[in-house]
Length: 150
Image (tube, rainbow, N blue to C red; front, side):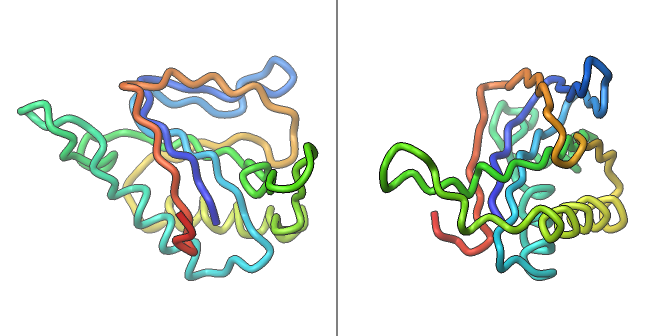
């Protein structure tokens, strides 16, 4: 499982000009699912994301998590995070999970975060064409991989 995590002042996802998900202060999580992800990947990524210390404390140090600041998550499916661009010009998505499997893992991730942590979680719509508006704060952007490949 891979994620691009961005600290935001606000963010929203539009599908066909309708708001599908919207948050104020928090984290946008662009989430990609691989063909071999499991419950352990879900738990690792959820724990890592909600506990990332990327918000300023009283001294201006990145020392607080989204949980500490009462923020929210906006989780958007992003299969292109598994695009392999090493050969040629067209990315290969051979490591990305098949859509039906990816949807199951994606939904389990969202449900795990909602049930385990006291945090608001909004989402996009799986496999929809989405317009994601991100007001990146900082900017702070991090790359995460449950297999720790980077």
